Image 1: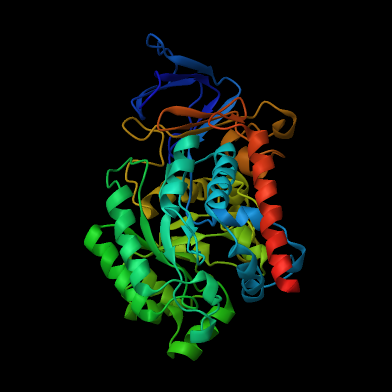
Image 2 (image 1 turned 180 degrees about the vertical axis):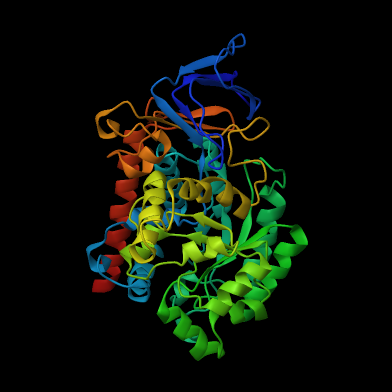
Length: 463
């Protein structure tokens, strides 16, 4: 379903692909969900009924791709008890709040996370939902797709899973894990029901056993085999913290990458979140196997987890995307802000030339699309998906920076909100407002659900 064509007229600065020079004064016509025509020096005529957007003050870039997130965590952002905690302590506390999430909580947290993403230039996202509390009623993946469709986001969520609870040596409590049979049966159901293999699909499915400390080796392997039967991507957290590496050595007698090899959860159809604590040999294995990394700089800083070796990974040919991660470990879903942090964090250890603005944008667009298996997403070129982020740079925070308007989006600015975000040819953020939902109503709903979950957890603690 497409509205009339959209013509982006007289674009101040158009980046079709970070590897190519920008265009000034160009027109771009979007029809049928794809980029149908680009006129480098302008001069395109709007088809009858087309919407014309004057972009003479704007930078237009390919829509950004978010490669790892936990939407439900928007409901527990900034909790005082874990503002200064590292990952394992942070998880132990929040599991006992998250277990109260219900279908409404999933729906509104998904709207909230995706709304923030869309408003900060992200047009395609995954979500790693691994939390299935006992007694949860409803089709969780279906609820998330409904939220994505309401907002118009291109969406490839993961059917996440946890099967290894505290009683079996894992980290999560019994109340939020499932049996392997439940997980594998539902994984197959959601693939059959929702997955679209086409290169510019609006719905895809990924299978994602949560982490080495929350699922069994057998479930990792069985999930990998099931995913390959159906041709879907695989995902897990890996090498995020030293604690996790130590856990793998103590529990399985091997480091995380060797464990993934044993579980068959490695290769060109696999992407790992974080990947901070890999040694040189492990990086070589990732490069040789074509395995992808979802880099989460803000979360890694927030939790004190460390700095991913992105510069080296890129030099070795490892495909690295960018991700905002959970909204309780960031604590926002600001996609453009994430690209800025990716740019800056590499420079802390590796020097001022460690990562360029163009490299960061490539990671955040085409690399992320490749990681999620969208082959025609991530550039604004003819025949590619009509996904665009449109920022007004003729404002105070960008004044004096327009010698390189694209880089200005990362080096400058104090507000990462787009004027327009377009997904699949649809205007989904229009003059800085979400089109699909009333923002004030969403804020009220999310706050009410958040307070109720926190109150339930507090009541339980006092019993």
